[in-house]
Image (cartoon, rainbow, N blue to C red; front, side, top):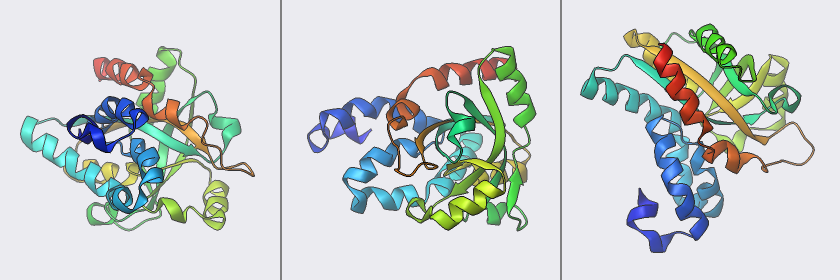
Length: 219
């Protein structure tokens, strides 16, 4: 919204990205803020750090305002295994809990199950969309995705890293709501040089919205 209300504070590229990021925000996804964070980390990073908490809070607010009990969440992620994720949608089965929100809504554990993964997988297969099932890593510390953590998560079977899923899944489990999640990897972490060439497309391509609509028709 700020790119529309305060246009003189943003570059043309940032203004062009604004509408897409607004739609992503409606789906509780904050990864679209990464390019903004890179250009102005002092002001943007604090809001990114609380991504999981904000997304979980949004789900609660939407339920209170509308009565919704089924939520479709989608967005971009970093790839931990580009051989598996390139050209495919990622359907998370479990998420490693390296954030704070989930521990307020679920018993302590390293991972939380993403319970509707098989349903999402079946819909993607019906639509003939390329996809891969796998564990993901939820973190609220994007600059602490260290090599040691990367190696540990990949050894456990994680194929992507993102910022909201564990917390939102815990909130939905706590209240008995249903969450349907899928991701698209943009930046690639498993190469010698950090590759962000796919990040803009993963963040701003509208195909995820159309897929979410197809999921909504089927649930």
